Image 1: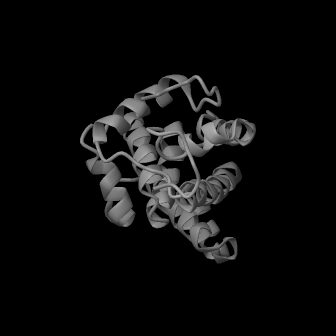
Image 2 (image 1 turned 120 degrees about the horizontal axis):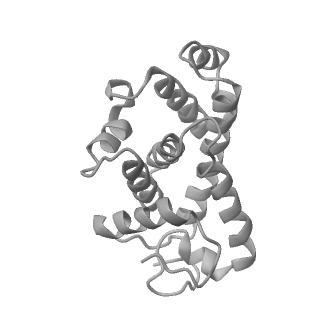
Length: 185
């Protein structure tokens, strides 16, 4: 049960965004800037970072929806790849560059000062450039905020994976919308 009165049947971050369209607009703009950029990291890699950080934060809604979006970009129909990343990315089929970037993202999740020079050097050695490192840190930091927004208000989250897959398809096609009339479900 949400801590505040949110519209019934509107799960996850969508509930608070419908509650407060004034704050939804810049939050959606941030999500679009971070996740829909075609500069540097791919959209799938960006979503993967968000889903990974959300799993570390134990935010069910965010890890599931962003995991579904990452899976859509990676043609991971059964979510096995995404699950392997969340459970042990070091043993997954990710590139060494993405493994190094997820190491950085995991440190950001604990606290920004936990990112070490050694992690940054390892990411650069694996092929990451300054833009990749910048975007990884910013995505990880933003997802900590988004996760705390969703869980801090005790929003609801559907358990049916088909709902997330449907939403993921809409996100891949249309992005993250601040339009309150937009109903992805």
